[in-house]
Length: 193
Length: 193
DNA sequence: GTCTATAATTCGATAGAC
DNA sequence: GTCTATCGAATTATAGAC
Image (cartoon, rainbow over the protein chains, first blue to last red):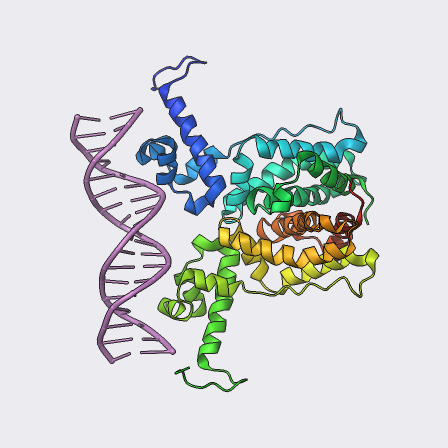
């Protein structure tokens, strides 16, 4: 509280710098993963001094945590036609992945960074499980149903945005929805096979 | 050809050392990814000197290439009941993932290592596309059908073996086959949605 | 074949001038 | 707030003794 007061809504120079650093960090983490995304490279992209990154975020871990902080805000099952739930979820996830590089960064880093994997697990299951709990035949199966949906959504994200399989990357958004929608629909609502 | 002759079938000391190094390398790459799997750590696991790894494999790249060299040997579509193709493929992939850590290592490294991603693309699509070409309605769609199958298979491998989502990791093999089998079946044989 | 020593980089993080 | 200089540690890779 000994800091200088800051009126709400104003833009300090430091806020712009922070935002620039975070944008560069997301790009680097999404492109290279955790280890190869160096603070020096992030700083170079943001055209500032590497020591500024440390000043603002304390450490590389702090930078990563700030860069991938996000709120998915999946739509609740209310207001969606039950038969369209699978397609709606796929379309929503697709939009989230393409909006920025936060999820791509999180996925790529999660492959080798335990804390990021934990974060991915929390982000997805905490958002998907409520949906599954609301619509699947047995609410106790919500974690199972949600994890099945996650496996297909993350698998498509992996082949499309991370591994860049041509046939996956070149699919139109509508085609992805048409193919994966029924899969998620079944994972959520079908009786146990 | 100036090397000492080696009768086929005998086991040199160096062959045992090579095999030990490769086993340790697979474990480390599977657990830590490319950057954090250091030659020193591999050597320590194999209880040999780090310089021996360089002597045998020339470089870290060479070690990785040798550690993940594998032949999937997917069963051809011949001899499988067409209606059981999806389930058969899922069961076969599951067995391959659990046989050793080669595929887990390849997947984890592929997230940040372009050469590994290229290898994963080749390994999977070259094995899956022929199957898809033989059974899908329009052979021209084989790459598309194969990439859809890959997205679901790799997605399950990701959540089960790499990110270790509890609900995915605790699934029994039969449950995985029951849930994913129909998905692959549809990706391979369904009419374009 | 095996090991020691070390070269050559590169990284995260810190100290401190301005 | 910004930058220079640098520390200490870790890495891959090489040279060479034994």
